[in-house]
Length: 46
Image (cartoon, rainbow, N blue to C red; front, side, top):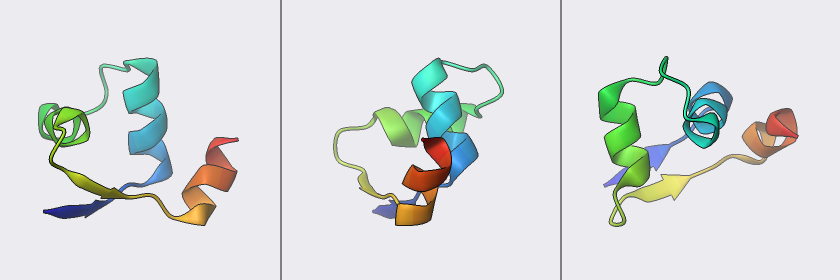
């Protein structure tokens, strides 16, 4: 399945932040997830 990742989810996942939901963490961790990261998300994360 394809998922569009927003800035908060990306940063919280990379930080290991407990505010990230269990479902989001599972999706971001699963090797078969097709993640779409918009350019604006990457720009905001920088």
